[in-house]
Amino acid sequence: MNIQVLAAPLQGVTDNVWRMAQHEVFGGVDAYYAPFMRVEHGEVRRKDLRDVEPARNKGISLVPQILACQPDHALMMVNALRQMGYSHIDINLGCPFPPIALHRKGSGMLPHADLVKALFEALAAIDGVTYSVKMRLGWDRNDQWRDILPLMDIIQPVNIAVHPRTGKQQYKGELDMEQFEALLAASAWPMVYNGNLRTIDDIEQTMQRYPTLAAVMVGSGLAANPGMFATDAKPNDYRRFHDLLVEGYTEQLNGGEAQLVRHLQDIWQTFLPGTDHKLFKAIRKSRTIEQYETAAAAALADVENALISETEEDSENDLAE
Ligand SMILES: Cc1cc2nc3c(=O)[nH]c(=O)nc-3n(C[C@H](O)[C@H](O)[C@H](O)COP(=O)(O)O)c2cc1C
Image (cartoon, rainbow, N blue to C red; front, side, top):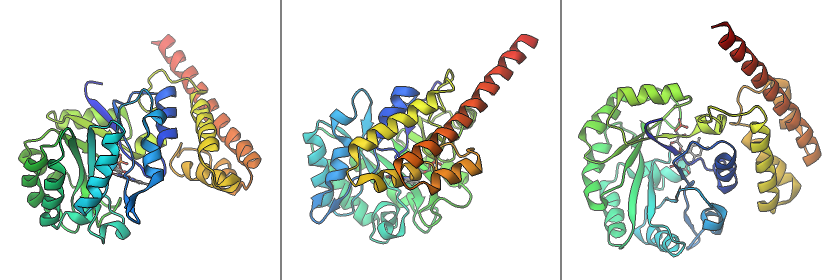
């Protein structure tokens, strides 16, 4: 495809294990955005720092993301990231979750241009770092971006990724393409579209509609089908991808078997949503890693068989043509 593809951050899904497995088995992503990091109890969460350690993200282009309202918290994170060698950092102005947004963080900052200005000024004062921004149209109104856009001059962002909803909408309701178009027209910065891109066709249509876009960002579509861009994916690639997840989480999660099983089950909330209902239920019901592995193997075999028959049908059609 003739456009940059960015993997959106999904807290709880697109961590280093997921990113490395996606890259190794399928690829097609130009840069991965890490789920946001934050300061808790006066320090940058260790788990968040571990996730972006260069050694855990070898061979991929990774953009760490920070979530903060207070400039001092943002600076702590930027300094920690600079020490790790990062020089491009994404600023989260989009998170819609009420416990975060009601503390004026993420999309909850969008009605408070004064806070955004103070944050941007503190960040712009740091040498050697470039920023991008991931934002929504507003928190409780779809035009709050109008007060935020002029502030971008302060940080001169590499790009601005927009999910065209308000924070209050969370992930429900219509995408507001009219406001997105107004924002696209008003912005002097490279723009990235993010929202409901599930197939290569969706991306191509978006590029045709908005030819000035610098990139597209794909979240749940890629979590559902990590092979979305792998035109030559083999049927057993989904099993390979899954096995890398099991291997990685077995190594990285230290909360014992129950935590491991729960985490893998959570992944199936978004992974391969076409999975047969009964097979999915067996995954949900498993309590031990053995039960989980048996249930997941059955579901993956089903996916594999479906892909094999699809491939056979395709080659029969090719012969018929
Ligand atoms: C479970 C979940 C976790 C998310 N975590 C983050 C995050 O850490 N940082 C962020 O900027 N966006 C986060 N998002 C928003 C996504 O990056 C993306 O903007 C949103 O899902 C819309 O894009 P999509 O339709 O391609 O999924 C999250 C979304 C979901 C559903």
